Image (cartoon, rainbow, N blue to C red; front, side, top):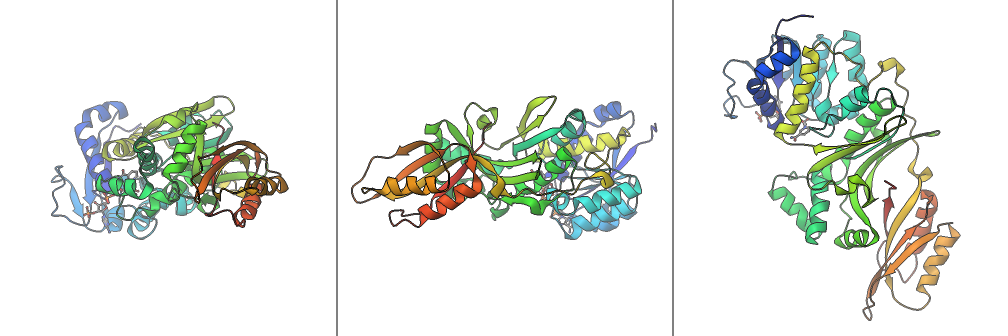
Length: 431
Ligand SMILES: NC(=O)c1ccc[n+]([C@@H]2O[C@H](COP(=O)([O-])OP(=O)(O)OC[C@H]3O[C@@H](n4cnc5c(N)ncnc54)[C@H](OP(=O)(O)O)[C@@H]3O)[C@@H](O)[C@H]2O)c1
């Protein structure tokens, strides 16, 4: 093994880029000891060379073009921390891999959309494409599935993968406030972007889930196979009912393996209070992996932010310095199976349904008939106190049933004259 320094060039000096520079500078001795060789930054790149970023960059060669840096810098590893699934981030990673340089990235959007092609390119050049920071920030979940759980057949991987959504849902519950109100707070505190749609509509979680599913099941990354539903429609009322029923609402990404394919979905989920993931609150993330030998393993930690994300980036760099080289998604690209998507209408599970009903004689009989006609069996029902002339919330939970039956029943219920709002349905996850 070589003792020569590992030379690193960093593209993007924002939150994660600066965090990475800080760790590599502050822990240079620790990292040298752990790797048996120094890890040194040789070049950096960002848009604005004049901005002071709170770190000393004076010893590094400056590039204003990241793709040029990818091929021209005196570096063994190119670290891409710009972001975005196309444009300069993609060009930089492709150029680096094509030039036979290792790549470390935190870019989940890029991996979710182009992971397979990039993994092929990395493999053809015999270099690493490492992306620990792309999924669940500081939680070493890629390493844990790809290495620590290598002796398991994984049957399901699920997680709270977006801190913004978890913060919003937690605050709504703790403070009894509505979604729009809490979202504004999250934006003010810097937990949510000015345009929050990627987070709250579930797209960010879906990017991460597609990557996790690939590593967990040895299949090609297939972002289009992920069925996505965000948290915009979750109301304070649903959150209160969930508590009353012994559940907590979380935005989960769930990928599960079955005989007829892999179901990948992102949706608000009611998890029982007895499940550890129900208690992962605020901006924290958690990933639960079910393996046939290990049983169920939960990892919890900070899924974003300068330190946690840079921690994962540096771990990927350290792997390269130590000479650890693994197939991008755990098995060689040619062995990755096509991801056979299992449609959600084949899903079976229990459901929470909230209806707003005009309280008049016969109304429950109509609802019960619609459920019966589609073979949906009710487990419990809660009705709020009646206010004369107003519609009342009625909450139903079901036994295990098929999603197609549930949706058909809701379709029929929505058409009843006594139903004043579209029914709300939330899937219940067993644990
Ligand atoms: N922030 C997190 O907590 C977190 C967590 C997990 C993963 N990630 C991922 O990490 C990556 C970086 O995120 P971030 O939060 O650090 O982003 P950020 O703070 O917005 O920083 C992006 C950096 O990229 C630079 N940049 C933008 N366009 C460029 C271009 N054309 N050429 C060169 N540099 C360019 C910016 O330059 P200037 O500074 O000069 O404008 C900035 O330094 C993204 O893929 C993100 O999804 C972030």
